[in-house]
Amino acid sequence: MPGRRFHLLCIAGLLGVVLGARVVPAATPEAYDPWPGLVQDIFNNRPMNDGADVIGIEMPYRAEDAAIVPVTLRTKLPPGDSRRVLRITLVIDQNPAPMAAKFELGPDANVTEISTRVRINNYTEVHAVAELSDGKLYMAKTYVKASGGCSAPASKNADEARSKLGQMRYRQFVRPGQGPASGAREAQIMIGHPSHSGLQMDQVTQLYVPAFFVNELRLWQDDSLVLAMEGGISISEDPNIRFTYVSNGAKRFRAEAKDTEGHVFQKEWKIEDSGI
Image (tube, rainbow, N blue to C red; front, side, top):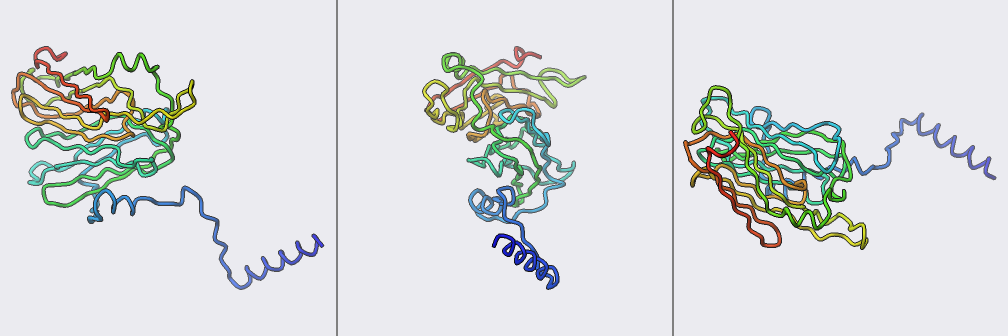
């Protein structure tokens, strides 16, 4: 009987070839494309334009550590273009909460580059969407091979993480030939925070650690906004934001961060004491 069944299956397969039947492989998880749904949910189905000349996104194709994957967003508008980048949204398509961060660029800060570190949960496309002053959205994307970043255990124990909660450091990098109070700048803000994703498990209790992360960050030079970020669970532990901007001659730099438990962290630095 088994031999007869095998014989019939062979005949059926041969007929399929003769009649030109097409064998359709079973769907795999990787074949699912969440992007159209994300455009609807995050961007209210607004049209997406080719952002090749507007926004760039750089990430490693294969990440060394899925819990701290570097990403750099770079604006590409040519000199003389009257448009301005208002916001950049970073979307990690296959993550449990795909919108990783939304950055608002200060109107006079001329921010052209933002770098941070994110968690990647599965092999995924990552989209950067720039909203310009012309009211349009421009999109660029890349692909990253990494998995397990959202559930990876924290690098610090709970006591150590709490002891550094909200500690902020500011570094400023001066480009050659430029003084400390004017011109283009590259700076970095580092915030001590466990940034729990809600998918990590306590190794002792075997219970999931509740989500707890920095969801707001605002940076000013004097009282002029440089950069603001709305963050989610995809931002890595101890958030680290590096960015370029143009100094307005301010004598102080201010930062304010808030997290999902209502903590507010504030700090101010004199430009002269910022590690130049």
